[in-house]
Amino acid sequence: MAASLVPAPTTNPLRRIAFDLGTERAARSSGIPFPPGLMNFSLPRTRRFSQNPLPILLDCYERFGPVFSLRILHGPVVFMLGPEANHFLTVSNASKFRWRDGSMGDLIPLLGDGLLTIDGPYHRQSRKVMLPSFHRERIAQSADAMVEEIGHALQSWRPGQTIDLYHWTRPLALRIAMRALLGFDPDRGEDLHAADEFEEALAFWGRDYLLQVMRGPFSPFDHMQKHRKRLDFLIYEEIRRRRASGERREDLMSVLLEATDDAGEPLSDREVRDHLITLLFAGHDTTTSTVTFLFYELLQAPDALARVTEEIDTVLAGRDPTAEELVSGMPELEMVMDETLRMYPPAWVGPRRSVESFEFADTAVPAGALVNYCSWASHRIPSVFPDPDRFDPQRFTPERKAALPKGAYVPFGGGSRTCIGMRFGQLEIKTIAAMVLQRFRLELDPDYELSIRMMPTLSPKKGLPVRVVAVAD
Ligand code: HEM
View 1 (cartoon, rainbow, N blue to C red):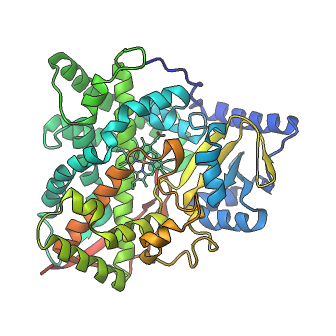
View 2 (cartoon, rainbow, N blue to C red; view 1 turned 60 degrees about the vertical axis):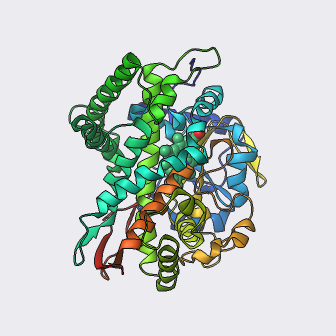
View 3 (cartoon, rainbow, N blue to C red; view 1 turned 180 degrees about the horizontal axis):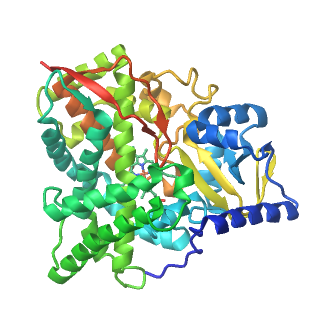
């Protein structure tokens, strides 16, 4: 499949700074400066932003309106917040923005050219190849594997134990994704090895930003590249094995191996690899975090917990859940998940680069600017979601959800680039939550204080320790 893509952003930190400053100069000389905002260089603000961007973003929204600029470290970034802004960026004016040379491009050293880092016709064609694998019926077929994996992972839980839910869910979600996407058997030695390599490579995005920009032997970047190469070796070996044997399985790798482009050409090994790694990356951390935040809030909300537990006990009556029950038979659980994704949308920022200048809310934005929408801050605007810091699943009754303004609720993005794994992720979150709540009564450690890491997705910095109080009757 011919890729006609703009060059990937440089991974050299000095060239990157020079490029960003050049973009700002070009904007100034074009006569369209960056929108008003906090444009002075400020290390304290950069640090506060990297620890918790919400107060700064919401304050700027109050002061400057739905579009404003923030200088983060050396470079200006435009933020657009609120329902209209989200709709503008993801739906009505999506073609004015690119993903590849925005901040998503920083992922290219690990992901290569997958859906998160490509644009235009190549993106459209790649997405078309993969979409059938993410249709409702295909996703429902994954439910059995999910139930099996979760049941297995829950076998060792005992009353009196304290479980770190975040660190328990992470390998579970990775096992489920590796089975569904790569067809890997997580109990086979080399496949287990692939999961470890992937986790080691991913750790790069959890490092401090200043460590991430370092290069050379023993730097975090070097560590990530080393593990990426080992992971690539395992994936390419599997691709070669399948091509040679002609083996076909019910996983996405098989779909990609059989796919052809508009000219009838099959995808190259490299293309198959990039798409698979991108899906693994986009899929397992987001789900893990949502499950963890869901329990963090639910265990502190006795009414919502009672309602959802009663629903699960009534619907399942002691059986394992079916795909149909999970997809549409548990409205209370659905509302709890929706509210969790409002308060903690794991992919909290949608980074783009403007390909042309444009106007939004009577404010001009120059071409070539980094422009972000931010679901996290948008979901906390009080005029859209009153009392936004309160966990209230009843906001998402079907009637109230349908009455939300366009673009108000965007945990999965929107438009032609809406999260392709949305149904898979939702099914997995609900399956894990239902099976845990069906089997155990849990309690949150009363001294636990939530602190949130932002990269690569929102996640609880210190995990989430919960005590298994009892086996459910
Ligand atoms: C709770 C679970 C998940 C959440 C909240 C989530 C959220 C998102 C969001 C917000 C975007 C759009 C980003 C933007 O506009 O900049 C996105 C895109 C994407 N997601 Fe997810 N995601 C989840 C699960 C998954 C899963 C399970 C997979 C794969 C199996 C996946 C694969 C992708 C891919 C490939 C894209 C890029 C789509 C494209 O550009 O065509 N996600 N996701």
